[in-house]
View 1 (spheres, helix red, strand yellow):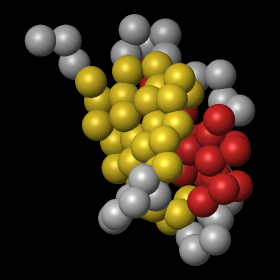
View 2 (cartoon, rainbow, N blue to C red; view 1 turned 30 degrees about the vertical axis):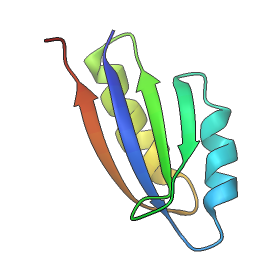
View 3 (cartoon, rainbow, N blue to C red; view 1 turned 120 degrees about the horizontal axis):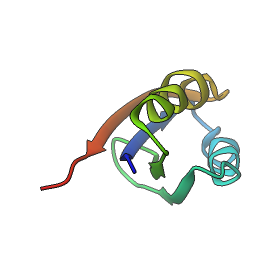
Length: 77
């Protein structure tokens, strides 16, 4: 099952709205608020790589208040 960690930068004062929307997504297993360059960190998983790509491109980047994302796809070692 493909898994990724995604860092989010949000528009000022939009952290809570983005947090709540991400928390309600069934593919999101963890949501963390951060201090520093990024505002939020999430952990997501999908049944396949195509589903993961769809979430990243069509869902998360389209959330109102999201300014920038950085994705790290986890791999087996």
